[in-house]
Image 1 (cartoon, rainbow, N blue to C red):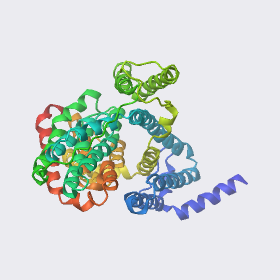
Image 2: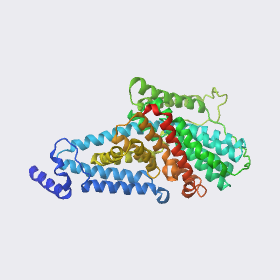
Image 3: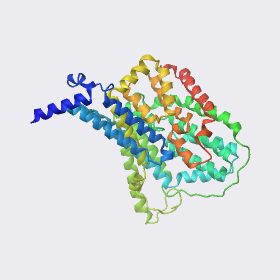
Image 4: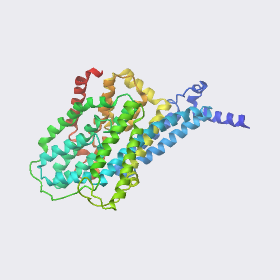
Length: 468
């Protein structure tokens, strides 16, 4: 019965997927399905799923849903084809490899998000916002301050959290001035994306490059000056569009809750642990990050036990006594982003297993120069999210110098600033400053932002020439 069943399956596969029969004759070798209906369907599914992701603002369909479904269907088709050729173990090995890559990055991001949520709950960001509002800075001063803060906070916190924090300041002091809000939000998006490009922790793309091992931790900081130029060039031009004037001072006082400063120190210690585990022990950075999560867990236990005792802490005041529960901070992580990342990794991994990334790599890095290809990656990330773009490049793994890997890290990070939909920060601010910061208000400044993009690339090629 089994031989008959196998023959029937083989016949059906030959009819439905004619392009794989010859390739399947080579045992233990991945099938080339790029010219097969399976590959075409996979491409179509990914395009449809990503169209839904880009339309999230209008459909209100969470971005994780379409990519997770597309990932399941793509790998289901791959599994069927490989099983029909008696090669299911190859598909299983490939999907396990993608799952491992995702798990490392997901757990790393989960710890970082938990710390950010803990600092937010302890009112660290609210206190900073209240301080900025209380000082009564002028509109042009606030334009520069929020931009620089976005640039310098995003390397530690993620660019999305940083952008939302700075936008809250802008709306609080100049909410009635649509012109100021619009230009300031553009400046914040550019600053947050530029700041995240020179730090392994600043963006998911830089984190992927670091964890892949193609660039070591300290080498990323060679991108500091190019990233700074990417922010300063458009900011200097937009400065003249910021209206002069002094917003009304708002008397808002926010006191950080007990333990806030110590949580900030623990976050820095966690980052140091992750770097040490990777640099000195050769272990994945995620091991150090999860160790750092234990720091926060024990500190949360300490806060819980000492709150009821009425102990005064090193900050001189109990602050507002609120129970600290570490698992609530974990639950508040941006799970839509984490699951979206899962869908992207599995979708792109599936397309790579089908053979499409080899074709793209041959086109981009075989026929073009590496510099041209990496500049194009940045332009592509303005339309498509930089996560799948960077994951695709890492999956292709072209033979490039450290300087070229730094270049593609830079362009993928800052290229999303060219359009408001090109980064999570831009999309979030369109919702937060609805009606004032829009796709077209950002598009109007795209040529100026492109000047900053070009300046950052040129400065990297000159300043970091030793890496090429």
